[in-house]
Each structure stands twice: as C-alpha cells, then as structure tokens.
Image (cartoon, rainbow, N blue to C red; front, side, top):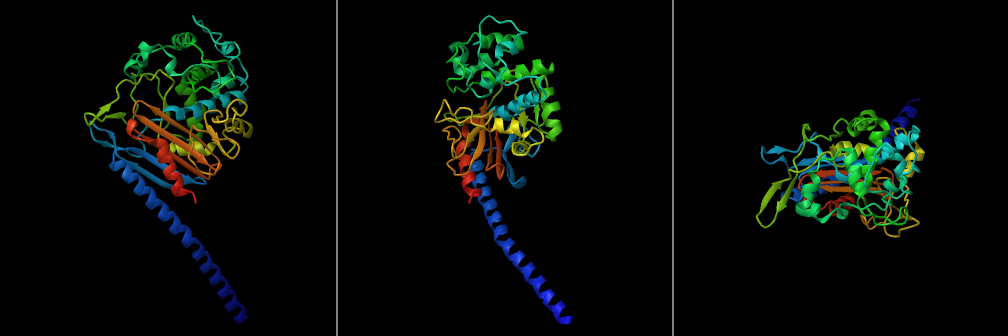
Length: 382
C-alpha cells in the first residue's frame, strides 16, 4: 500500500511538473509579446503618431490593453479607459447589425427597395428604383460618396456641408439630387451616404432616434456601457476625447471644431467596448447564425476581384482578397477602419475571433491605422 501511495505521489508530481513546464513557454511568449506591443505603442506615442486606447484579446480574453496620450490638449486631460472617441466608419458594422436585428424581427427585408423604404418622404431628385437595402449595406447602390457633392461644399474640408444641420427629410432630399455613379448591383463604390440612408431607414422603422435604437437594440443588451450615439450638437458627450490634426508647416495642433452630429448618426465608443463588440461576430446569440454569416459573407464576388465586402465589414480569407484592409497575413479575418475629422479607428477580428485588435486615436492625420494594425498582427501572430 505504501508503494502504491509513493507511486501515485510520483505520478502526480510529474504531472504537475509537466504542466508547469508547458505553461512556462506560453507565459514567456505572452510576456514577450506584451513587451513588443508596449515598445511599439510607446514609440508611436513619442512620435505623436498615436494618442488613444488599444485593446487586444485572444479567444475572448484581453491579453493587452494600453492608454496613451492626451484626450484634451486645452486642459491636459489624459486618455483613460472610459474616454470615448468617434469610431468613424467602424460604426458601419453596428449599423448593419441593427438592420439584421430588424430583419430577424420581420420589420424590414434585405431586398426591400429604397424608394419603398423612403415612401414617407418627398424629394426633388430621384433614386434608382432597383436600389435595395442589400445594395446600401454592400456599397453597391451606385450612390456617390462625399466627392459627389457640389464642389462649393467640398471647400475647407467640407466645412459648409458639415454645418448644414439637415433634418431627415432635408438630408434625403439632398442625397436624391446627387448624381449616381452607376447602376445598383454592378460595382463597388464606397458610399457614406448609403449608410446614412440606412440610419434614417432604421429611425423610420422603429419611430425612434438612432441613438435610442442603438441603446435599446445593441449597447444595452450587450453591456457596452461606453458606446453611445448623439445627433444633437447641443448635448454634451461625457468623457469625449477632442479631435486634433497637426499642421506640419507651423508645427501646431489644431482642434477640429466643426463636427455636425446630425450627419451619419455618429457613434462614440472605447477600445474596450469595440473589442467586445467584435467578439459578437463569432458568437450567435445577439444575432442568429444566418445573420452573422450574411454580415461576414463577401457579397462582391461576382463583380469585383480586388474588394471583398460583407455588411459593414471587409472580408479577407483564402478565397476573398481585398486591397482595402489588407494586413498581409495568411489567417482569415474581418476588418474595418474609420477616419473622420481628427479621429482614427480600427477593428479587426482574426481567424474567427482568435485575436481581436481594436484601437482608437485622436491625432487623425498622424495615425497610420492600417500600418499600425499590420505591425500589431506581426507581433501577436506566430
């Protein structure tokens, strides 16, 4: 009996020792990655290429988190975990998800025609009668982007346009008079106006402001406490990072003062909330599997060889390549970046959520978001 106990003791000790030995290399590897990431972001910060927050997760667990720089240069307020940034076009994934939520509830359909969805509005121009909600979500509607507005409104970084303070009816009327770039379903042409119309369609569908829809249908159910949308400039957004651009010739930072919150239903969030949001894309529950699959399917396969786009995400894998969002890695991933008036944002989910990278910055024309994402990917992926 004593021999049995002695043998059992030896087996247990060997098991524990083997487990400890197997964990040591992994712990050392993670420590090495963390050091490399810290060095990368410290260098970016010291060169004024990044002021903001970054969160990286592995299989749902945060493995790196850092906040650097200044959120408000007037008062020298530092960036902290709860400081919000405009997530710019990363908001398209949330807008698309809200559409899929409405589709699941049988409130709208992806093949609904735009003209029918806007039947409650009158406008002086026109929309192609065959544009569908699917076309809007995939940037195949034939609608233009900001470069399609009158030249006079493009001056001074679109200053006059961005101070227009449109109502929904006025905005629809404005977009209806822009010249289309092509027929629906025939080509990819990135269009912010398409997604702005989607936001208005959601407001019409639910008879609520976009910010309330976002809260009721997305942020509250998912516990994203630092993610909000605001469309009234009169309202103060708590813990909001100011946006800056750098004027090289004068060596000066300039705060961006002309963000019209009524345009495009802007969403403000943190790197932590964005990281949690990306995890939703590979975990049916908030959306069903069919909806998630549609969001992550390349809907451009028949019309483009160099752009892959789903609903609010660029899709890149062995079969689908894309010059937009190319990180130069072999693993499949979904990605979307954003840039607007001094803010930069990027969110990427690699290999079905194995790694998720999220970061937000408020030194817009200095942050090279895609190059930064490439460097991060090279550090964390073996």
